[in-house]
Image 1 (cartoon, rainbow, N blue to C red):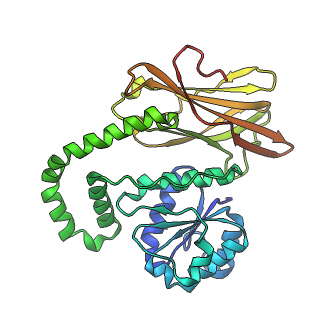
Image 2: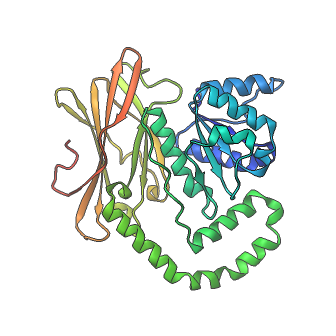
Length: 337
């Protein structure tokens, strides 16, 4: 299967790298990671080189161990030569060694110092999606640390490194009730900040992305285009049944076809991103997605709208984001471009 992201890591950091791999693949981004993708008896050097060649992006797990690893330096040098986008991921404050510095000096850095990795992996996903679509991504957003995020980060570390789980986990659980009680005001402040951000930025209603299947099967069904759709809601304190998703595909002549997104969503889909396949007519040239919900500040029903342009030339499919997300007041025709 074709891969998109090569994960470069020191062998001592496999627990972190493997966790990152699972998070990215859960979001529909196939990864190449050693030793998983090296067949039994295969040459490490040969298969790592092949893995880098087939990927568009290299994510470097930047640690003290990676700085000391000659293998990591070789992987970055090869990724740089292949013109892969390189994304350094740091879980601790660490600067790249001289052997790595040249390859990461002008790249997009993603830090997760005091925030769980699963909350920051969306920044990597956003950069990867932009790279797939040939778009220059915006700089990663800075961390917004909170007391609960730091607690979750500590719990994440104890799960990642079982040898920490004895004394630290016991003390953490003993003090958890007191910490939560003391952090109530901080939580309220964070929620207020999130609501203000939603009011300023329509994209904060959520994220809807489309991409071509990694195995090249987008055009395998006659008369259809198969696409991965990833849906995520960022709304807080909004019931799931109060959020409606609509999607329409449009041809060059304005003919429209509905896409049944709601039937694909399962369980409490607002708690985490969900990714699934949908089919649209082969002559589709535009896809519009809408997420409608009560605005957290204005109390009225508003809709965030995302648009994508798609083009088929021979056996090649291209996907381009059309403009920026829009936030519009509900008027009954919100999914019409």
